[in-house]
Amino acid sequence: MAKVTSVIDIGSNSARMAIFRKTSRLGFHLIHEIKSKVRISEGCYENGGMLQEIPMQRALFALKEFLDIAKSYKTTKLFCVATSAIRDAPNAKEFLTRVKKECNLHIKVIDGQKEAFYGGVACANLVHKKDGITIDIGGGSTECALIQNGKIIDLISLNIGTIRIKELFFDTHNDIEGAKAYINQELAKIPKHYQHDTIFGIGGTIRAVAKMLIKHTQYPLNRIHGYEFSPKEHKKLFEKIITSPAHKLQDLPIPQDRIDTITSGVLIFASILEHLGAKNVITSGVGVREGVFLADLLRNQRYQFPSGFNPSVASLQDRFLLQTKYANQLKSLALDLFDTLSVLHNCPTELRHILGIAAYLSPIGTILNFYQTNLHGAYILLNGLEYGFSHTQRELIALLIEYSDKKIPKIPPTLHSLPPLSQIQWLSFILGLAQCLTKAPCTRAHITLTLEQNDKHTFLHIQSNHSLYLAKENVSRLQKPISSLSIHIH
Image (cartoon, rainbow, N blue to C red; front, top):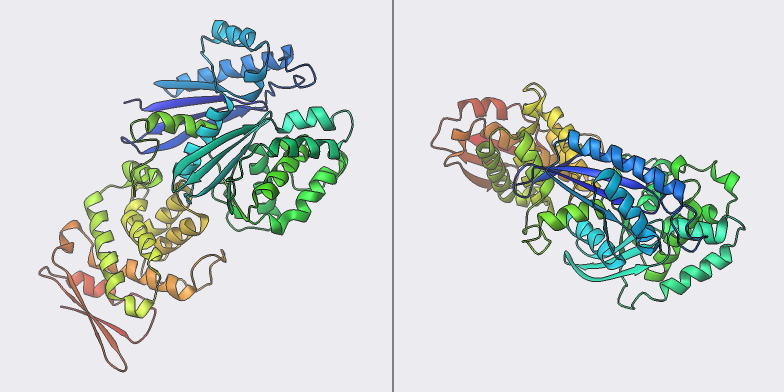
């Protein structure tokens, strides 16, 4: 089994390398990522697509250092792919030969369909929703994949990219109308069945837009992957970026490395969103590199993780969870408590799944220090549950674990999409109660739960064939979401 895999992606704008470490057969995590703004396509679109000497030199320098870094991480498998600028260049063979000779590296030039496929595989497996259309805006081209129920249904590649549009329409004269006409001509090639409310946004332009919106709206969670926004709400900002002269762009919260391509990038992005009728954008922090890695990892799985499997949960478990038996017992008891108390908490069933994950991973902070385990665990999970979870789910899991130590949250959540405070308090209480009753792997055996209600009180009866003396003491310190609930341990 290849423990460490490095993937290099030579795009029209940047060359990037991601290094992944497997923790089990399908569990993995990112251990290093680096990029260089080599801009291999610089000057090529105004010179018949020919790669120019200085950009080729930049790429060679970057690749040599990438390979040194990959070697330092003991890489056992390496992939290198190149996209639009190189596949379109008449002198691509010359560049590939130089790379092979100077770096001893074989570059696989992929076509637009394959590029769209890799972006689709990444989003289908690592984004929290399973239906939508990917938009991957690169320097030379834009790729789309139609995804339904986690499966790639269709792929398309369009010859519109940030650098291509910039060099053709904005470098010598500010021809917005000409750029729009060119883009719309390409968009006309998109089949009519490419219509969906949800868009998965891939690539540097869309990440730059997400960073800008996070800062502009003072969004409380500074995370790109899984960030969601409504295109309609920010239409005026997009129009301002497209129509502002270059010197005015400095006044907007645009990442500096995107200033010179943001106009063409946002013009492409806004045009596609309008064409597809999108209502919601989910920003993807994953793309071609993750797709190349997953296509290799899941080649015998039809490019899909098994149902119910999450690579982030698996990776965190493999690296940090000391007692999986105890974790499973916690999860089982927490879910039993959720079901038993359902008439009181009125939480929707989707929160049961979140509670199960929180309970299973709640001991994870012990790997750092036993004291304040809940705080360590909350931090690890907020930052470690990267793949397959929405921001709301990540923050809720972290919140439950943070408050699982005898108290329940009292302050309304910062993310408006979180459940009502009353439901969060119930979930926090259930997790805390499960932890009190399951202090060691042996104490979960044969616990039965019974709920008894009358006009004024509700009694939760907990029975076990094991002594629960310590549990009684700990349960008495728990904060309950309602005062009318009494807990009797037999």
